[in-house]
Image (cartoon, rainbow, N blue to C red; front, side, top):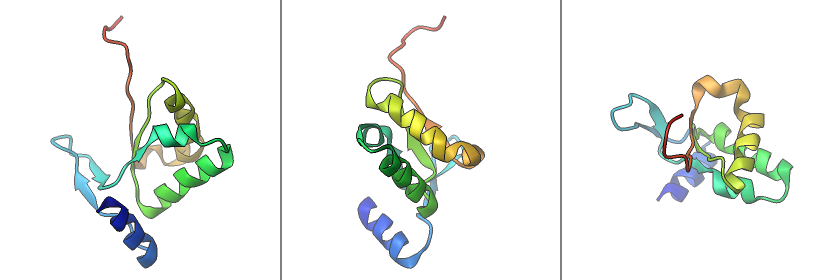
Length: 100
C-alpha cells in the first residue's frame, strides 16, 4: 500500500500524504526512508539522487543510525537535507545504553 502511495504521488505530481506522529505533534509522511538501503548503495550519486527524489515527492521522515551502512546514510542524508533540516524529521538509533 505504501508503494502504491508513492507511485500515485509520482504519477499525479502530488505530495505523499502526512499524518501526526503519535503524541509528538510532528506531521510526517506516511512513507519514510530507511537509512540501511541508502547506506548500502554503492554509487554515492545514486544514493543522493534517491534521497533528493524522496524529499521532492513529499517524504519528510528519514531514519538513520551510526552503525554499519547507516553511518554512510547519515552522510548522504546530510548532503541532501542540510538546507531543509527544519522541514524534515530525522530519526537515528544508537547501541549506547547508558548516558555519560
